[in-house]
Image 1 (spheres, helix red, strand yellow):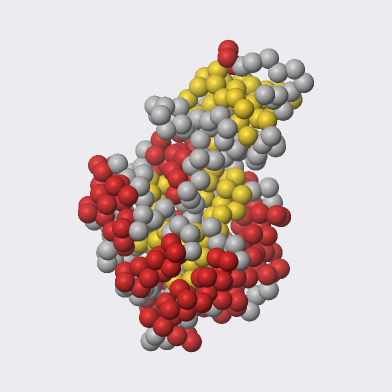
Image 2: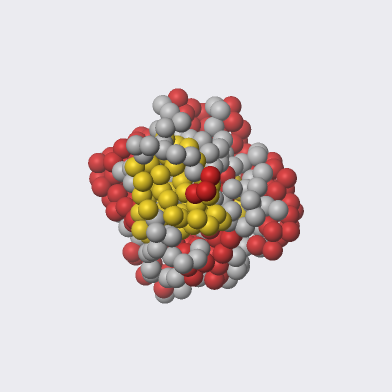
Length: 402
């Protein structure tokens, strides 16, 4: 194979699942060909590559490009009023009852054009890219009708054409009950399953289907209907689960072999065990925990005990986590949830890829995978988790291009 670019004199954290720790290689190199990893290993084993472009990393660390596996990056308006109400002591439910919350963003998003949605989302995306993100998941869920949900997903797809980043889309029609279906939760779920979801799927706008299972959102029975419809259309599922209460969200996600269940502050041991058995990734969202001033910490010890995979994401959204930094999300995950350095870094690389169903392509530095790299000005990987408000990114590589 002819190498196009080789990064030499590096310390490489492969994150390969069969390697101990971070899979560190001292005196390592990574080579790219056709946008994929053509070599990763010790420089002693690097084949001769006449004509290849060589980039001397001068001892810097290389990790897989970072992956944000849970964002609501595309939306209209803001939620500044919600923020002020929350500072005054209002709860999530009280803000929604006062006309704020998801429905207020719905109104602003319905009034926004695709171009304005893209324009608003690009600065948020740029902030993630500037910290080494190479893949970002983007959910709909602020339109709550077919036209606006499709517009959001079109805008998300456009982000991937505007910037050198992979965008993964999730249809989140079952996010909240729109005003036109007030008091008719089952009727709205029928609309999602029978009308909106098939059209979204047939248009190729969604890579997965998400839902919000909560006492003030949708019940396990309603979400199960959405998941069944998604599976019939060949789409994988994921779930906002057990964030404010435990109504069986983690168990539901596991029963449907969801790619991930996200939030999980109120998950119990049965849920953790079921997710581990099903291969469902636990996506922890410390930004929302911090911003909402929650006190119930996700049961990380249970996840470890049962071997449930743990990912970390920004949950970038206007109402509960206006966060556009995976580096800060890692720090919060370690500080607030007591994740280890290895868990935090794996959480935004290997396990985030697993949560998107993309581990075969991204998330680790292994032969044949996409050459998505983050090159860091650090002395040891712990610095990525330790520092706050500091970006040590030296260079970002997406599909072999720096």
